Image (tube, rainbow, N blue to C red; front, side, top):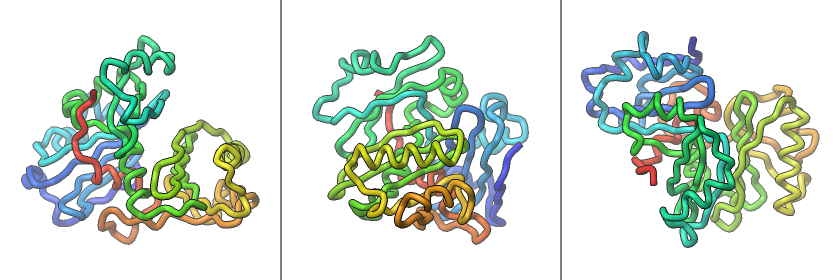
Length: 268
């Protein structure tokens, strides 16, 4: 089962060697896109994880030889470490703070110019993407963070990437990443709680802060309306990373499309 399928008329798997395959995996599903230069050729969201580990409908697409593959992996826990404090020898020490279970594995990768992210993810997801080379994996939000950073984010903007039951919050000050974290929420009131909680942590005032939203959000839906009750301005993220057809809302596709901004990043 998948949603938001798109196929461009020019897509030809025999040309895969000149294409980039983007895979964004979460705990229960995955999304994919095939890109040529800056143009979207094929995509689908909310695909069954079974198609990733034992592909049937997508067997040809997932087994083709691409110019580049970039895989975004989710985290069940994470911490950011300044590059100046990071060393491979210290990964185990940092990982102790993440309470790693037997069913999880730890990855460490550069997140931006100043920070390394150390995160744990489900070992089954690692097994499902191993055939694509773990050196092609990045943390799932790396592209989104990069896309926001390229847009010169203002110090009064708080960025939210909203999933089915998770929200990622991102804040930049003077061009540098100041805050990033992810939370699980079950209602629009819990979403407001985490947004206002982060504002409090950052000494931002909701009546002076613009929320910039992407992900599973639509104009006038219950989440957006509730956020608008507390913040002076709430708007959709208009950042455009790829050439998209008119029927695909850019803000809903941003996190997946932005993986195209990430090069291969060898797991440390």
